[in-house]
Amino acid sequence: MPSPQPDELPPVDSGIKHNARNHISNSYVLPSDEPERERLNRQHGVMKRCFDDRLFLAPVILKSGDRVLDSGTGAASWLMDFAKEFPSTVLIYGIDISPLLFPLNPPTNVTFLTASITELPDAWTSSFALVNQRLLLGGLTAVAWQAAFLEMYRVLSPGGWVNLFELNSDIDYMDWEPGPSTKKMFLLQREIFRNSGVLIDAVYHLPGWLERAGFINIHSELRIMPMGGANGKAMRENKCAALAAMKTPALKAGGLGFVESNEGYDKLVEATRDELVDTEDASAQAYMVYAQKPTAK
Figure 1 (cartoon, rainbow, N blue to C red):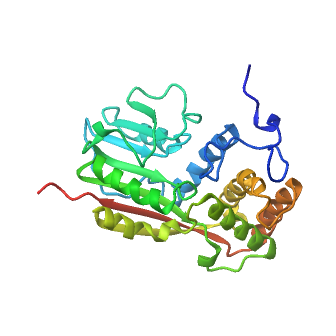
Figure 2: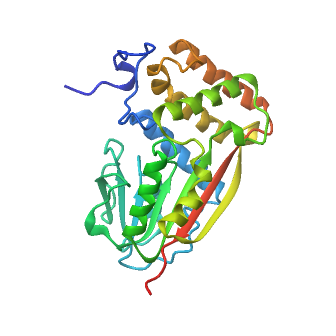
Figure 3: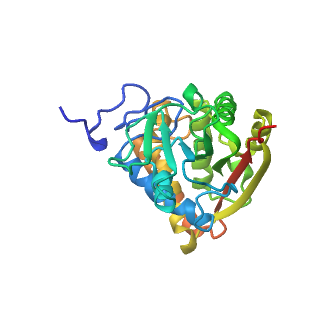
């Protein structure tokens, strides 16, 4: 029997009735389905352009036989792009807690594995030159973040690098004034994160957690991604698509005091999009954080 398509899924049995999307974990605020694969692929282009078409900033020099790990690879947008830019003699691994979005027929130097960044294979100790991870703020608790950094440290070779990309998604840190619908939507987003036990402001804790795990040469670079007006269309559409994708955890929790129906959630996302178009200084803060495992003494 074929799997139901997203628009054919039955209503959830708890909370506010709606056609639920496929969420693989109660602690991850985004779904794992074909619409999300498409969004992630579009998002990759937006994120890459934000950093001048660079896939990572860590000053790692890769050579034949080196291994690279993409943590929380999802649809593997970053990984597949990386595979095009580097020789096939570099071995690339992608992990995710679900294989649903892994691409079919990857290059021969690419291996996918269903695994969590908080518990990697024992055999991987000191074997990777680079560990990349992007936008897992919606899937890791404070405890999980710190466990992940310990695992990254373990699997990196001495002198290897970790490269992280995260957004500020907390309204309290924004330096522009949102409209009423945008403010309501972003406050709802914060409650979705809190209800799932994950940290919406995780990006501000990353350097300290990396240092605690033993990393050195920790750097953080900030880029501003416009969401308002014509220049902000790409990021605005990505942001609103992500907000729309968080509907199921919000409505399963009864709307969290912000919305009372499926239609109400949809209207709030649309009103947010409309306001962002007219909010010229609306923006998102994107951070690339990278750090090095010390070389062997």
